[in-house]
Length: 201
Image (cartoon, rainbow, N blue to C red):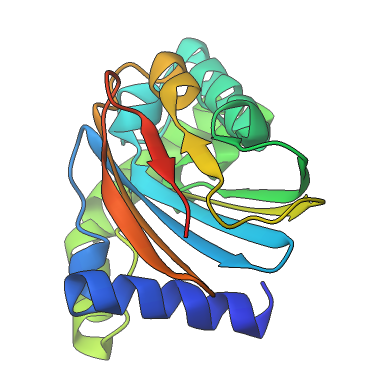
């Protein structure tokens, strides 16, 4: 991700929540969306508990769970169909980062995932404590992260972001906390299935 985008996203998080670590709290049913707007480009960073997307956070233990992970990842790769931004904006890139214990499910390796799950359960507390001690615990180990860039041919100021398709695709997700920062200021709010539109700065 470009340096200016990282700076804008961090600025938006800090202004909204005081610190980056409080902005990425792991809560089932809730996800965060950080938006950076500049000129003709919009960058999104969506992150939330894996339970929101597949209904579990352990490694895939069955072929059905592996298939659910694959299906959710594929849906999120088409983020422009889940988060609708104004008009004249086209998706440039999307990157979906799965938790480490789910990455084998990408290939449908349920047996390998079962083996990894046992070691993950054993080492989870030590790993999490190590992250806290190192001061790097900005990402919960069970969170999914999706980052996307959009190029827009029209002025982005005042464009709307519509999240209803995201809620429809993942019914376990009930709340999306949005912080947006751009050249015209900041905007934010809590989007829900029945109130899923935000005007971008």
